[in-house]
Length: 176
Ligand SMILES: Nc1nc2c(c(=O)[nH]1)N[C@H]1C(S)=C(S)[C@@H](COP(=O)(O)O)O[C@H]1N2
Ligand SMILES: [Mo]
Image (cartoon, rainbow, N blue to C red):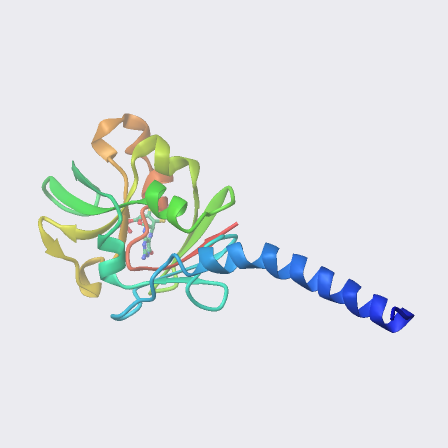
């Protein structure tokens, strides 16, 4: 027998079913990013669609190393000779966390902060370097993570504007 209370209950069940059927794919997507097993070296927060902790995506070094890599051999303002950096393509990292924004605000371990346009990453093949000349970079030598552009590939990149985006001792990205 149907009374008002039963109708209200069926309605709640229908709404709840719809809600969970819509919510389920989002939860499955969050699970797509593994959890770090080692020390967390990078935290990405802000407008991202994929997380592995409370609203953030945390990475250990192994997770960063599993992202498509690139090498950049170049002169820099920071070293006397040409050096070769190796790291994760930042375009790939942004895709992985489904970054939705214009820029990342990059914060370093020494609290230096710089906004970096996300469009730079595809345009210049910018990397988040973890190695220089084949060796992991210690904190005392601009590591563990260093944003690197291919400075020698264009005069535009050999400018203060791009040097200031070349954050070393990177610890956090905020996508906005
Ligand atoms: N972690 C960190 N990265 C940084 C900086 C900093 O102070 N800390 N300075 C930035 C700026 S503003 C520029 S121009 C270059 C400066 O490098 P230099 O101080 O060796 O000339 O590095 C950039 N990356
Ligand atoms: Mo600078």
